Image (cartoon, rainbow, N blue to C red; front, side):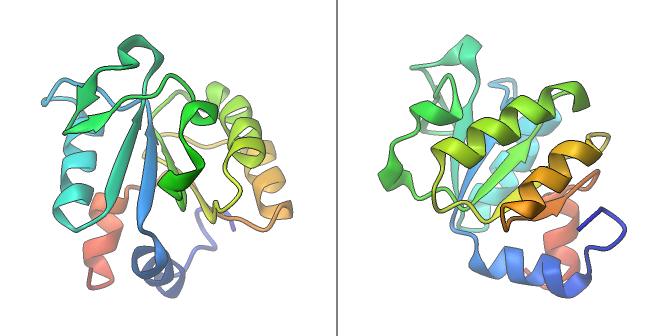
Length: 144
């Protein structure tokens, strides 16, 4: 699904079925968009797992920060990867997510982030892909 083909029903399903979200590029700085979105997601009952190599081993929003997706323990049960990185970083993140997160269902690329080839690869692996959108905006629109 490209950003254009993701429907409100798709967003509602993602919001309903997701429990744990790995946020790649989560900043410890409260003024950064990644921090605000993660805080919002936590306030809605989602477990947010921070991924930021510069802060690995620390905590952000009360959760241990991991350097990579591969470092997240399997029992975390990551359903969705939310990407706060430049678009050119997306292919490597998608590749790692596909190999390291067996229960993954959704790749979500934040506002301003998209990568057609990486999206196609994730879709071919059976994942729902959302590009250039924000769950903190879209989830409330579908009644989260």
